[in-house]
Each structure stands twice: as structure tokens, then as C-alpha cells.
Image 1 (cartoon, rainbow, N blue to C red):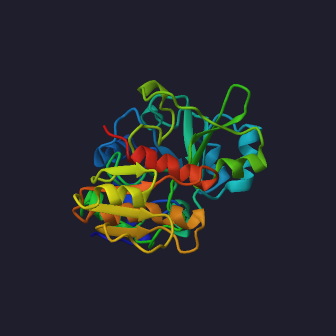
Image 2: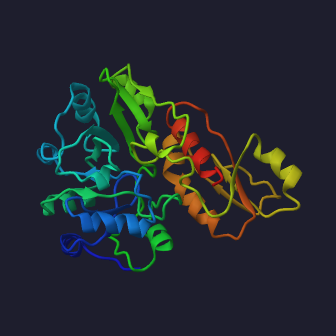
Amino acid sequence: MKLISIEEAVNFLKRAKVVAIPTETVYGLAANAFSDTAVSRVFQTKGRPSYNPLIVHIADYERLLDLVTSFPENAKILADKFWPGPLTLLLPKRDSISDQITAGNPTVAIRMPSHPIAQSLLIKIDFPLVAPSANRFKHISPTKPSHVFDSLGAEVPIIDGGACALGLESTIVGFDDNSTPVVFRQGTISLESLQEVLPETYLLHQSSNTKETIVAPGMVKKHYAPNTPLKIVDSIENHLEEFGRGSQIGVIYATQTEPNKLASQTVALSVTGTPSEMAESLYAALHHLDKQDLDYLIIERFENIGLGRTLNDKINRASKED
């Protein structure tokens, strides 16, 4: 694992190289957003298709003016509440943002991270950073340096910021023709939290997976997936009683509980039972169990409100077949 300092990362980025950096959500594979060479390296390193756009990360509002043609009032209201933090806004782009970043869409996804390392890095450079999750396309998002190494290998340098505090991606919000906020990707900020600020905010209904519908990251049908198949079950205990004697099954419990003896490996996402604790632990649990040579993993759906709705979206995409 190639661990580097912030100063070393600055030098890599200035030379159009990629660097894995910590954010409050997940580790990102960062590169100079103004360098086509650097942006291409992000797509190549991740094995990410060109139709899947990237998020641009900025340190402050001053940089925003160089990247977008307008900043709608509802976008300002949400940014005032949630920036710096795990909110990404889809805004009309300037020509300074390449079509490679936006996959040809007229809007660019922009976020202002709150992680001190990400902030320090962005302040030290004179260009914004693209920084999708630092993992192979469709695989589990990384929340620790070891996850980045396991997915992308030793050639990608990493700034070690420890475990990510939030553990799920940023929430992506765009705006419809009436300037009403639309959630394009569910993330750490729940729909209900957004509606406390702007009650008219609604969740995009995604009916298909054609390239034309993907205007923001996280919209592909299969995503966040371990190599070991993940199954969503109605009852962990019932499933184990029926199939546990014939298969090596990894179990993800929402809260700490007495593990079923038929489970080969178990992980509990939460001690307190809070959704934020479950969200912080989900990807780490998937990474851990994915190394255990199991036949498949099982998990129950979460209560479908707040962060539970986000968690359900993540496991639904992680359990999809290609």
C-alpha cells in the first residue's frame, strides 16, 4: 500500500496523476478536473464507463463561480444548509468543465466536502478535483485505505485518513423545470432532511437503466456490489433454517444479536440501533464478508424511511445481477 502525505498528493495531482483521498462519505479517486489526461486516468483506473459522470469537488464558493453558469435560489438554500458536507448539486456547467466529466450532460455534479484532509488538499491546489469512489466500477465503495488497496491495487497512492465518518455516498440533488429539488442519488442526507429545508423536494423515479437516463453518479442498476452474491431476505432466521445446513452463508445483522449457529460468518452493523451507525458500517461489513470464501451473503431490508431508505437503495443495487 502506497501511503502519501498531503504535500506528496499535491505533487501527484499537479502531474495529472490520480490519488485516493478520504472524505467524510467514502474514499475518492481524485484527479485534476481541468486535465483531460487526469480525468481519463480516473475512468481507466476504475474501469468506469464513459457514460457515467463524475462529481467535481471544490473548497469554497469562489471556485463554484468558475464552474457553473448559474446558481439557482433553491440550490443556494440547500448549500447554505449542507455545505461543506455530503450534498452534491447538479448545476448548469460552464465550458471549463469538459463533457468527459459530465458524460455530455449540460449539468455538472459539484460538492464541497467537509473532511479536513480533503479541505486542506483542495485549498493547496488551484484546480477542482473529480473524485468518484476509489474502487472498481460497480464494486463496494471504500471507507478505509485497505478497501482502496484491495480494489485498485498498490499503484494507486492513498492519503490515510482512517475510516470515513459517514460511510455512504453524498446525496445528489438536481432541479426540474420548475426549479424543484429532485434527489437523483440517495445518500447520507435523507429525503426527509432535505424536505425539512425545502418541503417540495422529491425522489426521482428511475424506471430504466439506459445510458440516456444516467445524469448523475450512482444511477446504474448494479452498484456497490461484493464479489460474493448478496441476497435480500424477509427473515434471516427463516432463511438460515432452510438453507444454512447446505451452504456457507454470511449474515449481516442490522444490530447486535445472538448469531444463528447455522451462519458461517456474521457481522452486526450497529450497537445502538441507529441508522447512522448502520450506514457507517455497511460497506465495511460487505468488504469483510467478501473475503471469507462464502457461497453468498444475506441481509434483511431496513425500515424504509430516512437513512433506512438510502440503505435499502444501496443493498438493492448491490444485490442486482448483471
